[in-house]
Length: 67
Image (tube, rainbow, N blue to C red; front, side, top):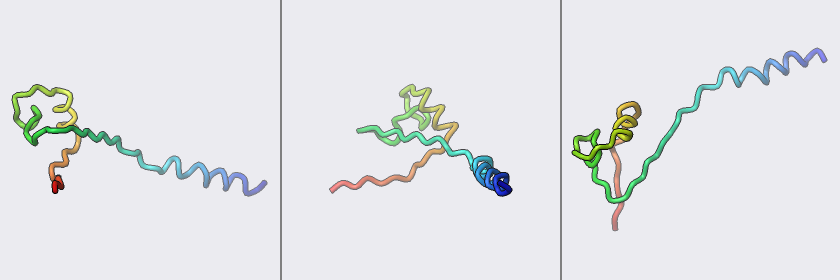
C-alpha cells in the first residue's frame, strides 16, 4: 500500500506531459492542375480551401509516377 501513491503518480504523469497531436487533413483530387485553386491565383472561387491553405501548411513538392 505504501507504493500506491508512487504508482498513481507515475501513471498520471504521461497524460499531463503528452503533446497535443496535430490535426491532419489530406485532400486528394483527380485531374486538378497545380494552379487550379483560388489561393494559387486561379479564377475559381474556393474560399474554404483558400482558408485551409492560408491557415495550414502547404506541401508543394510532389511527384507523379507515370509509366
